[in-house]
Each structure stands twice: as structure tokens, then as C-alpha cells.
Image (cartoon, rainbow, N blue to C red; front, top):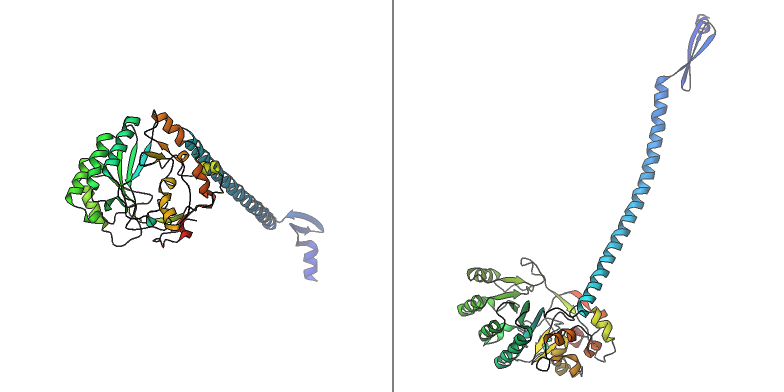
Length: 354
């Protein structure tokens, strides 16, 4: 009875967010600040979770859009690169940027799929008189104004008259970079005379580092440093000898579109090749005779596939010729080319080239 009386006079009850206080039968509704705060916190938590869910959705959408933009950008860059390559290939240069010549046809390494066909070549060496005559004519046509010249092969260090080519090349081309392109195998065994000649005639050693374990690169580095000879590692970091093979397949029946192949070919009007007084826009046609002889094929090279340096009047005729497709392009299956194939030595199987 005492409790009921007190409850009648004064009592406090919770009603959701309010406290109901009764004094002498009169009810006073007062907000329960604690519960009100808890309620607000709960609402905020629900709102935050909802926002987090939306944000997560936005982030996923943003990531998709970002990836889409990156893919589009990469695609545009690739298309720009392709377009730039096409424009460069089909535009006659202001001058002859470079050319290259084999001093030796065969090689001591014989990489699979070599597009110079060195693994298939018999032993053959550049004649010094032919070299001198052609270089004199090239100097006459260009005024000696080219950026660089590659002396290669095959393996040029196999030529027992190698040092005789240096003064001739430098006589007719005193300023351009002269690159001796080698696989490096024979470099450690070269005589002091070789290194002296490289220094005297300002020869740049261009090395392709193959995944071989028997080459003393430290010794080579010491030699070039001692004689102050430039050395360039082609295509790879000098400390990371990662050389890949590639497949440049030939269509022996010549059923490809010559113009399309020329436009898509990375070597066209770039790897200018000099052989026996003839200039070619790339390395395949001047060297395909090794392939034909070894496999008994008949991939033809016609007079329209090269320009005779002794029959032209000036360098402009050469530059215009090099910037156009040649009939031989129909034998290259450019779209089927493959790169970054693990390097290996050639087994001289036709599948390496078809």
C-alpha cells in the first residue's frame, strides 16, 4: 500500500525516448537524453553503412571506368605507334639514316629463326674490294652523311681480314657511328691489335647478350674501358642477358598482300641492307638465297626488289624507292610473326621460318 501510494504521488516510467514522470497524478513527459543519443547513433551508423555501400559501388564503378580509360589510352598509344611507324616507313627520309652490310654470312651461334638466315648459310666472307667499291659509291651518293652503319653478319669476328674493313669504312664515312655487331663469343680472345684498331677507327662494339654462360663479360668490359671504346648492348640491359627468339614466317607461295605487309612490317625502310651494289628496304630479300638453297625453295628476288646504287643519279631516287612496298613483300607473313620466344639454337628445320 505504501508503494502504491508513492507511485501515485511520484513515479518515473520509460516510454521509448521519453521518461514519463508522474507527480501527484500529473504526468510530465521528458526526453530520455541517453536513449535519444543512442537512437541518433544507431541512425548515423545505418546512414554510414548505407553511404559505405554506395561508396563501395561508386569505387567499383570508378575502377571499371579507370581501367576502361587506361585500356583506351593504351589502345590509342598503340594505334598512334602503328600510325607513326606507317608514316615513317612510307615517307622518304631527308637523308639516308643508316645501312648495314654482312662481312660474314655464316655464324658461330646459329639462333633459331634468324631472319638473316645465317644458320643456313655456307661459309662465305665479304670481299674487301667489293666492300671498298660499294662504300665509295655510297659515300658519293650520301656525301658521307648517314647516322650509323652496321657491320654485321653472321658473325663478323669470323672474318680473318676484319681489321682491313675498319679504315675503308672510316675513310669514306669519317663521321657516322660505325657499329660492329657481334654475339660477343669471340671478343675475349681478340688480340691487342683488334682493340687498338677499334679505338683508332672509332668502332662501337654492339653486343647482343644471349643466355650463354661461357662468355667472360667482365674481361670484355675491362677491355673496352681500357681502350675507351663505346659498347652498346642491343635490346637488353647489360646486366640482364635475356635474348629472345622470334618467328618471322615466310609464305613460300607468295600469297600475302605486299602493300599491307610493308605497312605493318617493323623492318621496312629501317634495316636498309647493302649487298653487291644493291640496296634493299629490309634484310629478308638480300639473304633469302640461303633459305632457298638449303630447303630447295624458289622465293624470287626480282630487279624491282632492290635499287642499284650504280644506276641511280642521286640519293633522292634511293630514298623514294626505300619508302615503297616491293614485290618480295608478298612472301612475308607479317601478321603471323611472333616475338619473345625462349631463345634456342637453330635445328635448321623449315618450321623456324614458315
